Image (cartoon, rainbow, N blue to C red; front, side):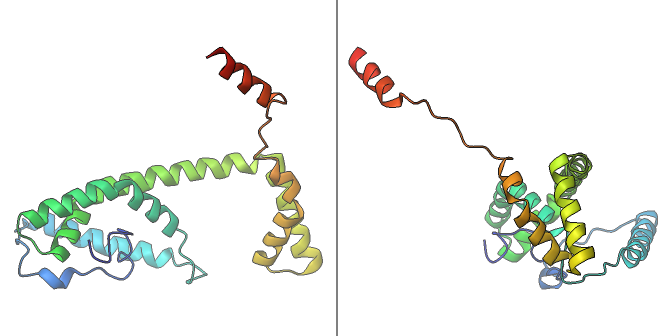
Length: 187
């Protein structure tokens, strides 16, 4: 479905494509209370966004979460796009309308993923292995004057043997060939 199907949320940051199909979209009249609520929501969200300015504009920490949500809702999204196209809507309109239809589900899923990650961060802080890596990281920053990225890579490399224990090798039976021969003989 065009350039948006691999990553449903790829145009979210770029501003979307709302102007392309304005004449096709059915105009819904909002009552004055709803219009006022929308305007208040927009003004309050813009104030919140100004407060949430990041120090590093190149990195978007929410991107992995948006991608995970996109993977989760890809199937219903594609079905909705196909259904709208069968109804005679153009592809751009169908993709954007499907996105908007699934927006509440997407937002709930994003919050759930974020909640799990917050809990994981709390759990990992109490893990002995993680604390050892963080201690090594801080040592590289303090003693070797490394920046955070370089110190992180060095700390992980230095502690790689401990980190390798997180995923252990499977133990195979020694007499695997003998067991297979017995099974074949009994059949």
